[in-house]
Image 1: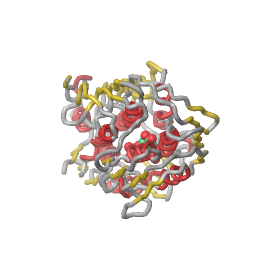
Image 2: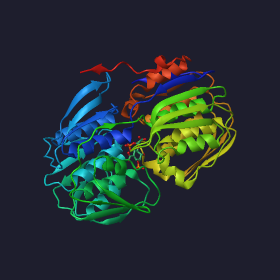
Image 3: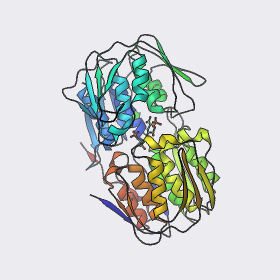
Image 4: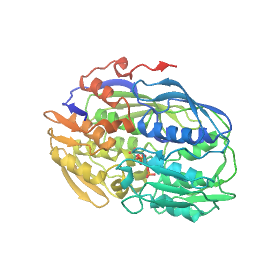
Amino acid sequence: MSEFRVKAISKLQAEFSVPGDKSMSHRAAILGGLSNGVCTVRNFLPSEDCVNTLNAMKALGAPHEVLDTLPGYGPVNLRIHGQSMKLSQPAAPIDCGNAGTGMRLLAGLLAGQDFPTELFGDASLSSRPMGRITVPLGQMGANIETRGEKPGCAPLYIHPAKLTPITYEMPMASAQVKSAVLLAGMFAEGKTTVIQPAETRDHTERMLADFRVSTRREGNAISIFGGQIPEACDFTVPGDISSAAFWLVAAAALPGSRLLIKDVGLNPTRTAILKVLSRMGAHMTEIVHSSEGEPIGNIEIHGAELTGTTLFIDEIPNLIDEIPVIAVAAALARGRTIIRNAKELRVKETDRITTVVNGLRAMGAEVDEFEDGMEITGGRPLHAATIDSCGDHRIAMAFAIAGLFASGETVIRNTECVNTSYPGFSHHLDAIRHERSQASDFSLPTQATA
Ligand SMILES: O=C(O)C1=C[C@@H](OP(=O)(O)O)[C@@H](O)[C@H](O)C1
Ligand SMILES: C=C(OP(=O)(O)O)C(=O)O
């Protein structure tokens, strides 16, 4: 079992880029495979979650060629051979690993096929709620059985079905649910509409537009007409702002630091963390290089003495995966930080409210736990502790950042899980821990050209 050992740093001066965006990589694998030709995808995230989705598409009849790999991890540049919306029955059950996104989006894709499929995942994924997708997909006529030990959980048995369009008002702000219904809607005759209670990441809608599949947006409602065949296109995945978030917090909380994160996704439905860190006192500049399709650019951040803040209700869906590391920033800030309306955190890879609260308390922070969040009174010095990630990648990485500010040596146990979203994290952590500053120190292992 691998672990991180982390000590406090006194300096952070660095420039680097982070691996490709996880949400966009899942979607590129799926839409590329549905398209009417060959799609080159660059900077695909070679993480276990996204490679599982890519392999799922291959098992469904949409193969890919690997152009470059990140050695030890997976494909970075690849060519996907789209099947013009005609998928075929896989020879075996499909493994979604640890990925809620992979399983829920694939369930939407497979709900309206004329062949059966089975989707399964690891222990964590098998305990996450799938009713949020089986309910709307069922309303469309899908026949999906949840055969997990826990009611409403995976494995999913998806029987052949013919779908009819629906208008669905989502009870929670979830981009996975929205995307599952829109993907199912591509196979239903007529107009399928999803209404979201708050703005959620809009990568599916933007990528559908890249593939010339039209969707319509009216207020909080997004509609799609079935029967459109995505036109093959090439796609470059920007760096993942959720991965950048770990270093942004480290730099923000260390006065005198300067960090430049290059070529990262700056989609406004994902950048709420920048607003929060600015409110806490970090100095930040965003430079957008390109705003066509998915905005991409650089973020420069300078550290400061941080002060606590309250997260706004509308910000929550747009920084949901960053909350564990925002909680670390809050423990390092002076004053109170209030994180409420975030009960979705309880159904992620772990119950991220309890795992964050317990980890921060173990390091000496003052934290109150609520059903839907936590309140952190920052400013107490953090001390080293041994933290078990419980198999949750965001917990492992967030507490590695906390360790950079704690007295003594913090040990994070059970860290293999970081490969689900951030291959190369430990390489970047090493460079930061050893206070190396040159950009070249932060490059990932060289990519081999096939
Ligand atoms: O659509 C996506 O790519 C994602 C949506 C979010 O989940 P929810 O849709 O459950 O909020 C997020 O937590 C996950 O990491 C990725
Ligand atoms: C919750 C996450 O992902 P998923 O739902 O895809 O497992 C995450 O990446 O933090």
